[in-house]
Every structure is written in C-alpha cells, then in structure tokens.
Image (cartoon, rainbow, N blue to C red; front, side):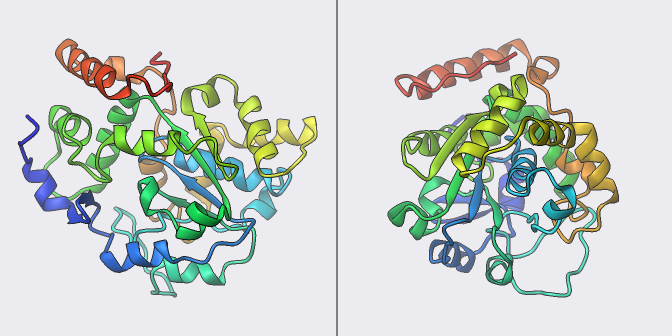
Length: 301
C-alpha cells in the first residue's frame, strides 16, 4: 500500500521539496514564506488541514479586539499563506493580484496569518528568533480524515473521491496535501515548549471553549473580562460563524471557498459514521506505531 500512487494525487497535487502540495503552492511561495519578515505581534495559526483552522483564527482576532466583531472584521482573514492563488468553487478575482505572501506586508498589525505548512517551512524568524506567536490546533486523525474527505470533494476538480481512496491518500500513505498527518502534527507537538508556540487539542477546545479562549488570551498577553469571554463564546459557535461567512464580503477566508466548504459539523466522533471496521483497525495500528512515545494522545469521541 505504501508504494501505491493514486491518480488523484498526480492530478491534483504538486511535489515540491519531497512533499505533495496543493497546486496553488510554488517553490517561490515556499522561499518567500521562509524569508517572510515577522512582526513581534504577528499571530500565525498553523495547522494540518481540517483541524479547526478557521475557528481558531476567528477566536484569535476576537481575543485581540476584546470581542468587538466590528474591529475583528478589520483584521484580515486569509487563505493559507502559501497559496499563490485560490481555486475555490466560489473564487472571485481580487483587485490586488499579488501573491498573498506579498500582500500581507501591507496589512496593519496585529496580523492573523494562517498556514498549513509543516513546521520546517515556517518563516525563519519564527523558528530561530522566536518572533511572532504560533498557535496550532491538532485534531484526532479519524475526524480529520472525514472532514478532509468532505472538503476535498467540494473543492477539487473531477470525479468524487471515495472515502477509501481519500483515507489511503491522506493518512495511510501520507501522499496527500502537506504529507503525513503524523509527521506534521508531531513536528508542531515537539516544539510545544518554545515560548512562541502554543499547541491546543481540537477536542479539548470543543469540550471547554472558554478555557481555550483564556489559554489563547494568556499566550497573546491579553487579559479578558468574563463578559468579553462570554461575548467571544457566542461569536465562535459553528452557527454564528456560518451566518457571518454567508453574509460577509471579506476578500478571503469565506466567500473564496464558500462557507459550506470551510465550516461543516465541528464535532468530535463523526468518524464513526464513515469508517468501516477494517479502516478503523488499520488506522489504529498506524496510530500506535507512529505516536508511540510522543506523549500526545487524543480523544476520539
């Protein structure tokens, strides 16, 4: 199975520096991100795809604006920093055709940037100088696999991908976008003790969102009142975010991919409605082999 290359991979991904990437990523983009000047108050939301990226980004921009949605909306939400362009079902032309990694230099502080690149591809100033703040949410691989499957079938061209092929491509072989889930997640997990890195579990965030907001605020040097936390809690529910994504006219982060593509159920344990017994057993074995000794565990329901 490890040697099998699915036709979907060759058609929809490009291989750069030994990893598969979405076709919107280029060598130039990876070089530019590595050299990107980072501000001390930059917030980088760095996750494997479908790990609560947009949810976490929304929390971050509300935390730094004390829950003021009008102010928060003035902080750009962006598609992944490494994308030169976005090919979404509802993609719209932008007045500024520069790649995003060039446009962000004009954005006011604080910037909330998000990316799916593996840890080694983060900006050099983040990794060697401790600049900016990196916040990572990690999600159990079973729910990640189901969410990725639904997302890819909404945005990728061609015939729908079966869940069996999606699971093999993205999790069993690590030949899907951004490579191995295990390598990606463990790369950020191993950096969790760095002063400019916070790693949160998606499942913990869902179980106690208030606590997650307080953790994020503390990491960003913000002190929030109970009233502000209550306001943020109300604004970051799936229903509230979905309503905003439908009505908002922001350039990226919602209409570019359509709200239904970026937000789905946002629940823990949805994998049980999709996985077969054999698929579950295969992923369980792979999980035990890859995660042994890491100290990272997940709740699966």
